[in-house]
Amino acid sequence: GFDLAERMGKLPTATQRKTFMGNLVTAVKAGNKAFHAIWIQNLLTGAKTHVSNILGTTMATLWEVPERTVAGRINQLFFKDPRGIQAQEGLAVTRALAEGPADGIALAAKAFRENREPFGKSLVERRVSSAALELDPASPMGRLVDAIGSTVETYGPGRLLVTEDAFLKGVNARMELKALATRQALAEGKKAGEALDSRVANLERKPTARMWRDVKDAATARTMNAELGTGG
Image 1: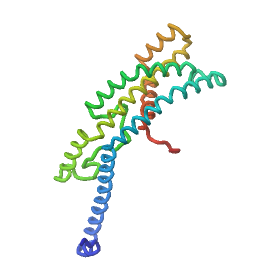
Image 2: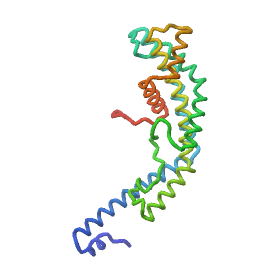
Image 3: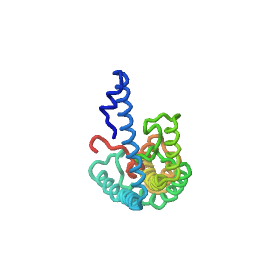
Image 4: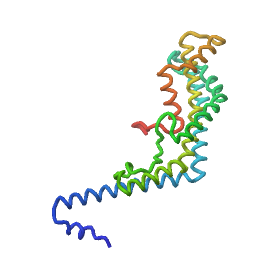
C-alpha cells in the first residue's frame, strides 16, 4: 500500500518534502472539488430536482401577488410613503403574470442557446474544469478535464436547470418591472386611467438604470439564485 511516511522519508531534502506536501494538499483539494462537481451533476439528473426547482420558484412567484398587495395597503393606510410599495402594485403584478410567460420563453430560449445564466451567475456549480480543480490547463490531465467539463456543461442536466431558471426569471422580471413602473408613475403624480397606463408603458419600455438593477435583483432572488446575506 501507499505509505506516506515512508515516501516522505525517501525524499532527501526539506525543500522536496515541502513541495511534496504542497502537491499532496493540492491534490486533496482538487479531489474534493471534483467530487462536489460530480455530486451536483448527479443531483441534476433526477426529475425530482427539476420538479422541486420549478414548483418552489413558481410558489415564490405567485406569493408575490398577495404579499405586494398587503404591503401596499399597509403603506397606504399607515405610512403613505411614495417611495414604498403602493396599493396599485398588487394589480400591476397580477397583470404582469399574463405577460411574463412571453418574456420567460424568450429568455429561456436565449439561455438554452448560449448555455448561460441570465442576470448573472447561478449559485449551482455546474462546471468541471482544470481551473476549478487547480490543474495546469496545458497538461494532458488538464486538457482531458476541460474536454470532459465542456461536454458535461453542453449536454449535461445543468443546461436544463439554466433554461428553467431563465423562464422563471423572465416572468419575475416582468412582474417587478411593471410594479416599479407603476410606483414611479404614481410618484410623478399620474392618476389612475390613461395617463397612468401610458407612463407605466413608457417606463417598461425604457426603465431607468436603477429600476433595471432592481428588476434583475428581484428576478435573481425569487429564483433562489441570490447570494445569502449575513443572516442566511
